[in-house]
Length: 187
Image (cartoon, rainbow, N blue to C red; front, side, top):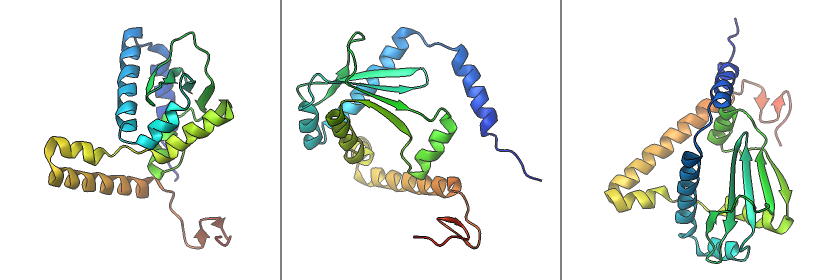
């Protein structure tokens, strides 16, 4: 007897909870400001990323998922700031995957989420470069707090957990099934 995945139920539950709850404006703004601080912390560790972003000074990117929207503007220093609400975005990035559970599964598999892109092509190329090349070295930041050896041990444990989660989420392939599907030869 096949059991149904709990994800449709969880998606419905998430939709009901998120649909009825509207966080206060001050909380949304505070969370967005903290997100900008995190982005800028990561960008400050990458001078090439800052230089590329500085060339896009005053351009606004709007990121959307469901009802969540954040608008960020590039600064002359190559960092980000919250864009004024009245400013029109030069680039809009919309996550098209509605299910938070499917997004989490895709992230664990290492897949990029499906995104609809609208706006200026050159700015989109720069944002894509940032997404592809800038990474947060969490282990380095952690080592400043607890020291190199404990940070390295925690980093290794985290990588093992992510690897185990990826193996758990990755669909199982039975005998005779390659990456291309049943009965097909892999490339």
